[in-house]
Image (cartoon, rainbow, N blue to C red; front, side):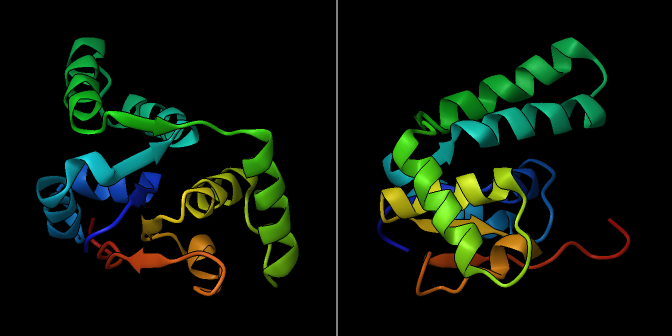
Length: 141
């Protein structure tokens, strides 16, 4: 698992909620924390999801503080990333939401492995974006 990895929101949530794939994300964070990144879009999506999961602002702030300490490298969405996202959307046969395309393009821009459990992202051929697909959540989660 050596090399840069970019966590999608789905991977971050799997870790936060200790769902399937938690152990994979944990191993990445422990083995080479300086090479695990997130996109700026992932921070937005993660915070929005935490509002749904943790209604108490103070508790939510504590969780965010933990992840801000764990994930010190946030990659920006630049014009180059936007162009890569456009290209990915054009080359994939299904519609990929803009946020997902931008996250995948962010991984591609730094030659990182995209870590996720998102079916939209799984539709992107691995020749275009390297991927590590986490197990899906069970139906009861």
